[in-house]
Image (cartoon, rainbow, N blue to C red):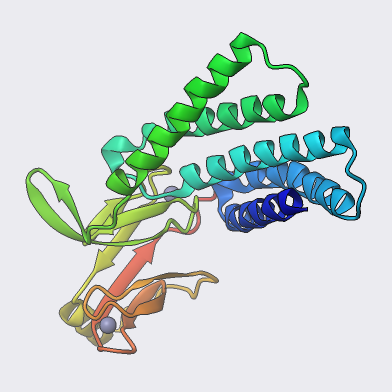
Length: 248
Ligand SMILES: [Zn+2]
Ligand SMILES: [Zn+2]
């Protein structure tokens, strides 16, 4: 019973990660893939909770949970913010967590554990742990990005095109993963006043806004594409990105 509850909690957390993954273009397929073992293992846990403690069902449920957790971590590591010069770490982290999940699944499902499986699980388990230890260090939101020994103020939000979380710097910045250009200016009092004066037609309204903490007052706001002002402190902020380029 306790095992079923613990398993269901882990699955619930994974489902939440998959829902986030579904919203990002780059992890949509991975998240859909993850929903399959997640729903199957949830069913198996419910079945065992109803008193059907069949060994094979319990082991299958645990194996599917391990696979689910591996896939949820892969979605997470694909979307977390990493410095531009460290995005290659995804190429290491994502396969590592997937393999760790697979070997853990085999561990639960197979009745006997050979030396090879034990070593593989130990190695990939240790690598997964290393990835988690490194993550807070590299993924920390410092409020600035260091470039050529200069600290450029930055704000963090999900890329409107690929969904990866990125620290966008003031001025023109590119997505660390898909290269989308973001034009981000604050305070933009002068530029906005000039645009209003010149009566430049505002860009067509877009269906998406991005959400991030105001760089001046730290209150989280919705910022639609275009000229904005913070509803809390009045900071003028302009944000533009191209929307006509769509990834297939
Ligand atoms: Zn992107
Ligand atoms: Zn503000």
